[in-house]
Every structure is written in structure tokens, then in C-alpha cells.
Image 1 (cartoon, rainbow, N blue to C red):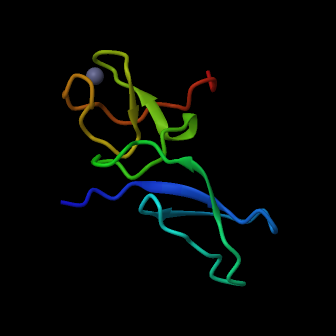
Image 2: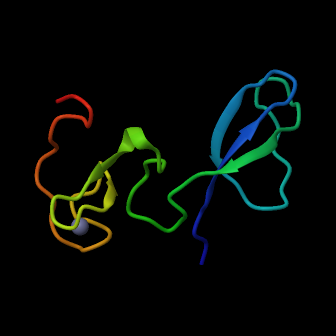
Image 3: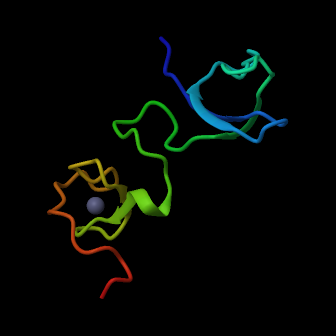
Length: 94
Ligand SMILES: [Zn+2]
């Protein structure tokens, strides 16, 4: 069983960042110049999840049933399991 976890890696020299499904302990190198990348963060949501979106404000919405945060690419609320309605206007736009 391999639930892939996505990590954010950065090349300290160039500052370039990539997001890949990485295994802990492996060394990953920048595809362009072969420089080693360092892990700067683990991407949320943690695997396994039905959403591929990072857990950030831009990708979240409030469930109309329970008011908890849910990723926008999900149809069913991960908290209460109910089907959420169509997306409303972005928060702060009213
Ligand atoms: Zn809910």
C-alpha cells in the first residue's frame, strides 16, 4: 500500500519550487540543473484524500450544512458527508 504524499521542494540556489509526490529519505534533484532540492513543506491535504487541492484559503469553501471548511473540488463535505450546493460568490465579495 502506497499512499503518496505530496511535498513542496525548493532548490536553495535558484529558489525554484516544485510539488511532487516524494518518499521520505529520498534525494530529489532539480530536473533542470541537477541541484539537490530541499523539502520545505508537506502539502495538505494529507494522503489519502479525494481532493487534490492544497489546503489553502483559495481552494476552500464553507459547507452550507455544517459550516466547516471543505476543498472546492469536492462535492460532498468531508466533515458531515452531505452534498454541498453550487459554489457561491467568493468570500469577501459581498
Ligand atoms: Zn458539512
